[in-house]
Amino acid sequence: MANMTSNGITRRGLLGVFAATAVIAAPTYSNAFGLLKGAGDIRRVRMYSGRTGESMDTIYWIEGEYIPEALKEINHFMRDWRNDAVVKMDPRNFDIIAAAHRLLDVNEPYMLLSGYRSPATNSMLRSKSRGVAKNSLHMKGQAADLRLKSRSVKQMAKAAEACSAGGVGHYYGSNFVHMDCGPIRTWGG
Image 1 (cartoon, rainbow, N blue to C red):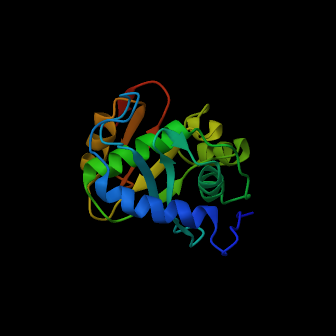
Image 2: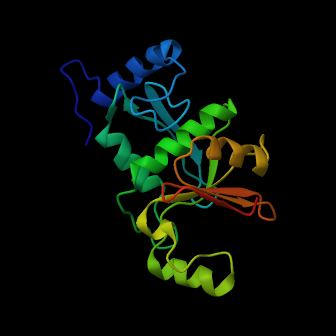
């Protein structure tokens, strides 16, 4: 899967070395399209899953280009853990997640509670909770439910709302924030 150079270094390894040096020099202004505040020239997602025990720390966008291998890694990580269904997630949601994380100025990775949900999973969750939408953007690969130990729901939601790029749900009782790349809206606040 990884492309090896003649000296045994993978393309991903080279990107990692480049990114590690570029992060230090990355500006803090908005991305090229002005969509998200604080995204910068390097976009990175750091998450772990209490459900699967997996963790991920990947740079998925450098200087205006998404990195296909990194997107595949994120898609797999954000799969429906109940049935291992993987879809192509909307990278605009990664942009919101990354920009909000950067605005929060934390090193702690997000805890991913829910990324992609298959229709069967969404239906099952909907039968158990009124808080699950019938046509959830989770089923389209456009949403994530996230938590940080070091930040409150209010702080996380405020950072996501500052991106002005999608929906933000405040779930105080369950201590998580829903972030999606659908229409701009908020609820639960």
